Amino acid sequence: MPRLFTYTIPIDDGAAPNPFHGMCSLAICKPGIRRVARPDDWLAGLGSKNAPSGDLSGHLVYAMRVEEVLSLREYDLNARVRWPHRIPNIQSAALQDRLGDCIYDFSGGAPIQRAGVHGPDNVATDLSGENVLLSRDYYYFGSRARKLPDYLLPVCHQTQGHRSSSNAPYFDQFVSWVRSLVFDTGQLYGWPDYIVEWASVSSCGGCTPRKLDDEFDPDC
Image (cartoon, rainbow, N blue to C red; front, side, top):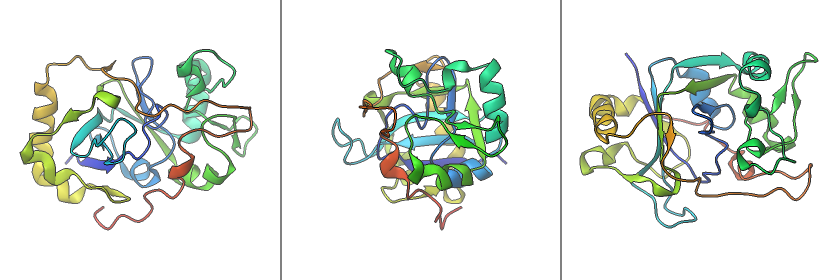
């Protein structure tokens, strides 16, 4: 049975998830979800009470149906050919290029962290997630997060970690509600709520405060 994973996004900076170029990817952060999610599972990123644009608790920042699961090594290999825009280029004038989430280079065997949104403190957490989740069947609202109906509020929480098992009674209702919004999939309907500019090649981006991620999840 497919599952619904929900978690709060403390810093929605366009990197985790990365919703650009018609594909949504979760390649960094949320290692607990990336290790266990499978095709046809749904991920729902929920707004934070302390979001830069205001209180987004009880709101949906993005939702994606997992279509493909790749190892981090496979993601790096595929990105070079299929998704070069996922490899970060922090010198680019285009925000999407700077936010590339394929930040681990496996070409030499052991992974080497590319310059991007994460720094050395994030390596262990990122790599512990093992996999990358991909989808073209997604809805991204960003700072224009959509308010959840009251009957779906039980899937929300403001604590670290994520929920999956306790969401089982709400899976069908959540999917039906998302589909009923009459939005086309694979589109951005809002901009990331928190954007970080890099001052130098060595500086890190907005994901850094999330290095203490969801390793502890009593609900999974």
